[in-house]
Image 1 (tube, helix red, strand yellow):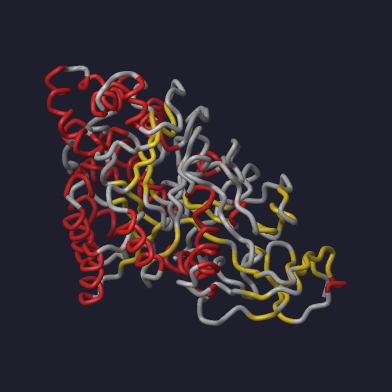
Image 2: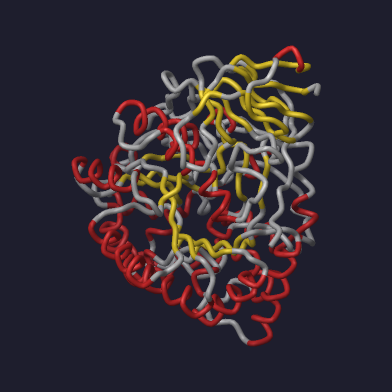
Length: 515
């Protein structure tokens, strides 16, 4: 048999998490893995010498703000260089289809803090129109999720209220359109507009529909609106009423969530979560406003903020939310203060932290992004991250934000950090378990049936990395630093990284869910 590629001499971590890496070669024909075992490299058109290295399935990032970057931009290869071969769309329910251009533009502006300055015509009247931008233009696969923000916006605009029967019926039809297009998950950001106003009736209705297609539910839950414990409990209730498997975005295991996870075990709730294992998040300043002043389109929010009585009510809340003021400016329209802490930026213009933050939102027209460090002690952070890293319900996902001046380092380092720091250096996690949490586990959970494992007949999304050198280089001060130690990455049987170097190939596809 003649192979297109043989990867020989390495040890396979097959993505199941069930066996230690074992010596074997992998044979690829076209876009499929066709043989695993002792193979003759002379029978291949191209051979890859993986001696001393690990061969794994391509990693799957289930929560990442990458889809616009993937079709061009500075950070198009930021995740690929870590071995991420499939990236899910619509994190936090963000999306711009199927919407009329005017509404799509409103949503684009609201989500610009997570996508940067890219420009598109936003002419995507159907889900398929949107998905058509990816084939031939991306180095990685995308896997669609239902973007609840767009679903709700299309049915009832930005109105901060429960949906009527007619509006909910419209949401059902749009959700069905995405599910028919191969979306494997109903995805929401319940602290973001307009999804923040979805009540349990709306969520249960849409979840029952998604469940009928074999899809799951994933959400940034209502941390700021309900508080963390009640937001988890709302998720439990949703799972019980709808029967759908549930997944919580960007969480961590501390005493509060550990108690909730014990409840999950006791009650048999079908729940998973993901983490990026850094002691900081990233979002826009609007989430620092009291919930009542976040409602509506960005234009409406900013107009309301111009009122002196609104400012007076907001400033004490913002002061409390900002804590130490060590948030890092990542992006804004004007490019001011990039890389500075909020405290330093405020001091540089002679303002209090809360006045500076409030004024910046207005001056930058609501388009700004900040790294938000956890407001806890460093020693507590370490304990929490270690507990998270080993939890059996946790998978790795970056929540990466790309193509902004000063992003969070997780976008360039999340996956390789797990391999370097938690596997090699600290030995908290076995290599096979770490690979499983980045490949087989997310594939099984989100219904990506032909990826996430190395097995004959599955897609040839493959990574070759050096377990002794694989590491992140992205830092808080210098976050746009490519990973090291990931030497080959194949997507659908085509090398996008060859001996550490980008090939310029764009073999990514839309990978669709099938029940």
